[in-house]
Length: 217
Ligand code: G1P
Image 1 (tube, rainbow, N blue to C red):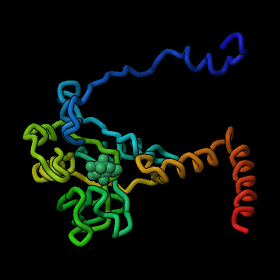
Image 2: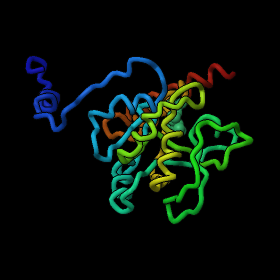
Image 3: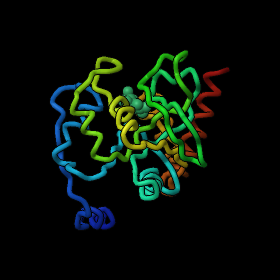
């Protein structure tokens, strides 16, 4: 990097790390609930955050920061949610809302990937959670749910019976990069939102539009 005069990049990698990274491997694909359960000893007795890597959220205030603020207020678990089209409710964990105050829902129940006709609402769980360690009481049971997997949503539904779990409608735009077209869309839109990439992307898309016109004739 010195040879190539890439001093700004060098500066970034030389910065003392602000975080410690620990890895725990889920040895068998038994579901999200099982994956979280694998980290139980590391987590211990503290509230903790779960971020699913295939959900990307772009927001002025990071989604997790918004949720930490809510957690500090309510002192109970908080799950990120957003409205989805009714015919897509079978792709998500869905909440059965009891009452809504601003962006926060009191929740009656949580159900993982219900059939579209059985979904209690169109308010879906998105991959950001702040959970209290009591969740492990239910994950410890290792009960198998939707898709033959140990579901985090099922443990959350049980936790909600002994301790409130709030749903929070976050501010921001969510991209599903676990889906092929979602990945492409997020790459384009993220580039358009960045000062260092916007012009190149606009130029690229303009050229592409001309190419497309040729194909459409
Ligand atoms: C997981 C959760 C689901 C949630 C979704 C959000 O499902 O189990 O409750 O709605 O993430 O992306 P997955 O997408 O891993 O099937």
